[in-house]
Amino acid sequence: YQYLRRYKNKEDLDHFLFTPKKTEGTEKEWLEVLLEFCCCRNPSWTELSNFTHFLNFQLSKCEKSVFCSPAVGDDFQGF
Image 1 (tube, rainbow, N blue to C red):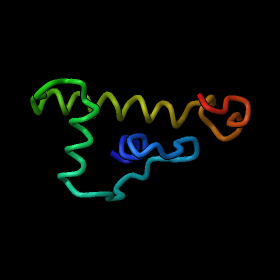
Image 2 (cartoon, rainbow, N blue to C red; image 1 turned 30 degrees about the vertical axis):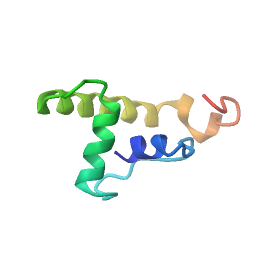
Image 3 (cartoon, one colour; image 1 turned 120 degrees about the vertical axis):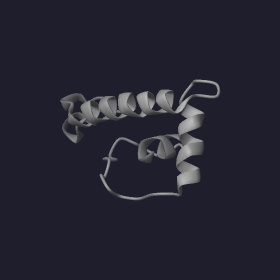
Image 4 (tube, rainbow, N blue to C red; image 1 turned 135 degrees about the horizontal axis):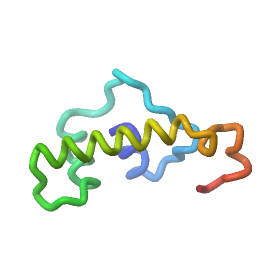
């Protein structure tokens, strides 16, 4: 939710890192943002669960990638 909400609001994600156990927004806001980005029309709970697990995995890998680190941020700005 933290990434999707910032992306939706066109915020800069280059220096944002996910903070586990940090609560942002309400359950209703979380679900609305999740449904907006899920790409399934009328998704089941299983589809939403799979989407969140996939997104979590991808974003975790991205945060750990040297290509997304501040060390190369100036070289790959905007990617």
